[in-house]
Image (cartoon, rainbow, N blue to C red):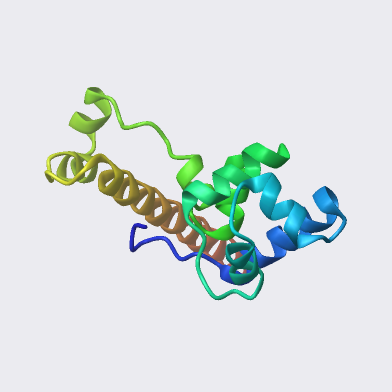
Length: 145
């Protein structure tokens, strides 16, 4: 598991309890058989003793007809932002934007560059909001004078 992922054991236990209720009426052994896992593994998930692997999240989703990406996001393997990442900028965008150019020429892997771009875009949104707020302040105070 990648160190940047923080698996929410309590949320996984909640997922397992939901699956347990809907699939086997709360019975553990039949669910373990359905998933092809040891009942001790199921009990460890329910008691939040271990973090679940991505493979097991996908197995549960596939076996029970649930959305795998939804479950993976819910338990912490992915963030919603990871799933909605903008595509990399095109060469013209890079040429016209000094900050993007620095990021793209950094030599970092694409996933790191994507995070850097998202942070840059967020900073720009924050700056734009602050700028609008400042201009509104000018307008409000110009009315008084």
